[in-house]
Length: 139
Image 1 (spheres, helix red, strand yellow):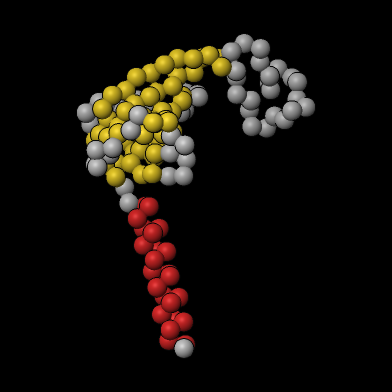
Image 2 (image 1 turned 90 degrees about the vertical axis):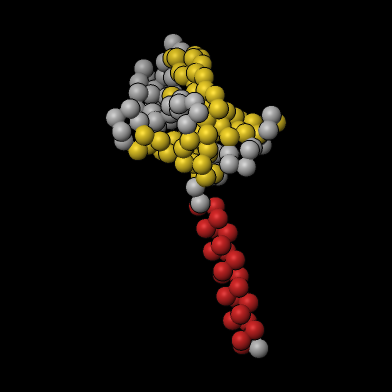
C-alpha cells in the first residue's frame, strides 16, 4: 500500500512539473503588421498619492497624450493575435516591432511577453495585452 501511495505522489509531481515546464517554453512569433495611435487621457497619479490628496502633485486638470502600439502577430501554428501596449512615459519599453521579423515570446497570465533588442542593442522584455484572437474579442 505504501508503494502505491508513493507512486501516486510521484506521478502527480511529475505531471505538475511537466505542466509548469510547458508554460515556460518560449514560442517564436512573427510580426505581420503594426501601427501607433495617439490618444489623450488623464494624468496617471503618482503611486504615493491617495484619494485624500488634492495638491497639484497628485492631480492635474489637463489631459496628457499617450501612444498605443498595436500589432498583429502570428504564432507558429498559424494562429494570429492582435496585441497592444501603451507608452506611459519616456522609460517605457513599449515599442512597435519591425514587420516581417521573428521574436521570442512567452504566454503569461496577463498577456504575451516579447523579448527584443532595442535601438541600442540591449535586450528588452515587454508585456503586450492580447486584444483579439482569430478575429474574436479576447476574454
